[in-house]
Length: 301
Image (cartoon, rainbow, N blue to C red; front, side, top):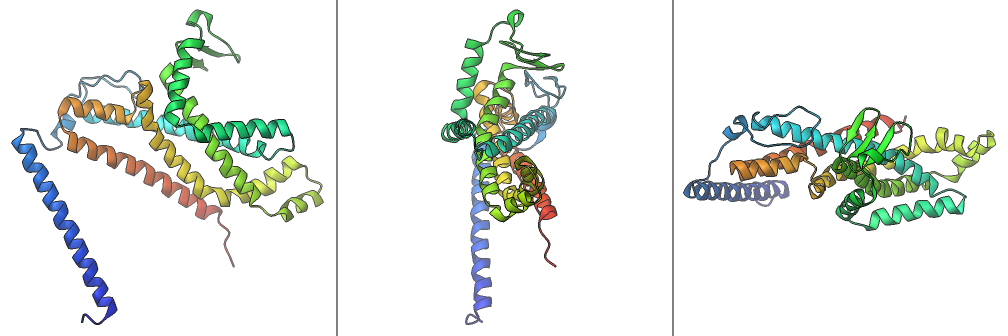
């Protein structure tokens, strides 16, 4: 039996799984025993007790007397909102900057390169803290708000546009993470465009198409097949980088969970919820990206 390579491989794998399972059981039993000795509670009952968590800014209604699970949902909503807005804005900006880097105009190409190099070489938390400090030092009070566009106001109170009012914290998070992520997406777009053969450009010119039309109808659709996998990685990074918003005081999911853990003393369960939620969000993003990639993939006949 042991001379058969397949059987021997299965036995080795079974032994490894058994060793891993035994280790996990030992760690969990030790953890439970230590928590009981220290009088710390275990279980998920705390999810249905009043949270006593005050969330300063949210897109879902929240009362600190509501159940803890409700506070968690509100925190998840804040994280999803920030992530979605940053993904949309950075995708549009990244496409624009990436194409600008290929411009024949040296000034446009140089400015785009400066953006990319600055964004890719500064830690995102440094960008957030820098923008947040500038927000309070440069912007005027509400009665002297700047109006860069009709219906848009910038002041120390935040950004107001089209009936929306974004706090300085939320505005800093969206602008900072968009600047950072745009640098990476721009390079992905540039690399995808360069991966398209010169023959495609020549075919477009032979049809009397302008450069913009060639990009729109020929190059960009083919580029999507190249850039979707790396774009998926950047979108996942947006979700993970959203945890840095705690540095400027925005109540995202992680910040809410930190407060819940400190009030309830359910640290093990709290960390488990944090890991589970971020894993579910990122796996969902990967599934959507993979489905779209299969949809646009070339099918050989």
